[in-house]
Image (cartoon, rainbow, N blue to C red):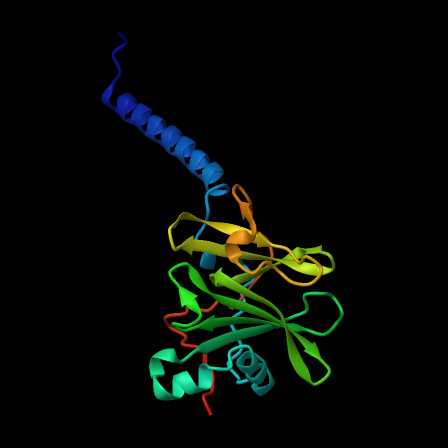
Length: 210
């Protein structure tokens, strides 16, 4: 056994520690590219929802839930809040609206409703109503049948661990349930994240009851 002086032993320990840390750091970096990163930290390009009421949009939303006004007027527990962003999903130069709803009637343990509206002359037409979605809504640069692919985080409601689901346009609409999308495993999510709000801190815009 070779006897080493105190200073040499100290230097050797330092070299071993540095080598170990470098190995751990490299291993961690390789794993992190595969493991799901919390959805609000995945995207460099994040857009928060609009803060100005959109009366045309509100009218379009209310047309999909005719009983809302009566219920919400008599019981505030039925109130619904909405978040929205404008984004051109089909490349025609006119932005569609991504709308995320919050409230007991539109949310469950697995997420809330996501709606996609298309502008049609002077009003908005519902393209898709997707349940069990979680924000942010990621719009991919890839398209299916002319419309941008959407990615949403699916978690809760018995789904553990969470995962990203790829929602593709079928020529008429997107899947009606986020869990019907393509489950992505080792996938590096790319695109712009819309409605990237911290929901507990931003209550959204109250859907009117009058």
